[in-house]
Length: 337
Ligand SMILES: [Zn+2]
Ligand SMILES: [Zn+2]
Image (cartoon, rainbow, N blue to C red; front, top):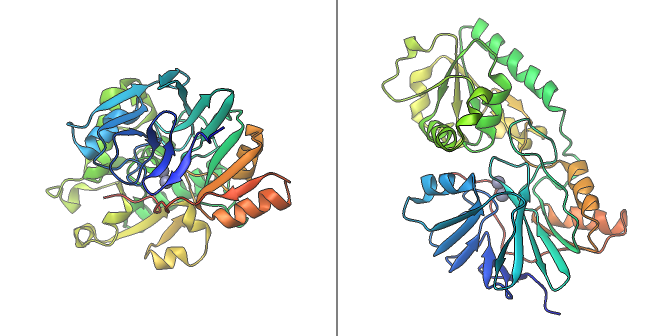
């Protein structure tokens, strides 16, 4: 029987259903795991995504795109291929995609994390025959501290920075990290100011999911007309792209704290020119990847997107699994415009 998914130059393709998953070139029908820009690109004729992802796609790609949505756990059929979404725990709206056809079940993980961060629907292991896993942090050096430890390190740093008469600026992706940081810090008596790109995502999420409001503090947009003198007892959130821009000059004196799994490796903080580094990640760490793979019970594991060779080799040699690197065109690191 023909495999349910093939690696093509456009990305993962399901021939039986004639659709692509997170295609990298414009196609007719795209099924999207989540709204990060390296997974959800412009130019597809139809987008099928999890319900919470649709408004984020429209915010990024424009209102004119054609989206169809599906809630977690609800089945749909595309040319006889059964398809449903399961929570991937990566960012709000992120989904693993389960495909079933003539007794064969495949799951594409998309990006995922196995830690329940309290605000993103938690990762759910799905039994399948074939599992396609990401491996962004697929090296044994990546092991995350528990969230509460990172949370108190970040809290301490904020108050220390303020005590030194500096403005604390946390750096993290607009979708995922920013919502998580707001949730973790919501009880701090701070004025929260969001870089416009984070503010727009925040507003979009709340518009579509007003019940999320209690998970977040009150926030304001850090527009260019906000004066430095107004930023008393304040915390600023910016995306990585804003870190090295001149726009930050007017916020002096300030200190930056970069929140990313990459901060686990010494040297990354220096390279990214940040004062403090917090390895808070929206991806699974090494033990998380391995436990997620094992929980699927899959007889075949394809590894993509990251440190593919090291994870595939470990699964073969130590776990005796039939695991290989999937020859897909590479995804970029989480990029944001
Ligand atoms: Zn992602
Ligand atoms: Zn990704």
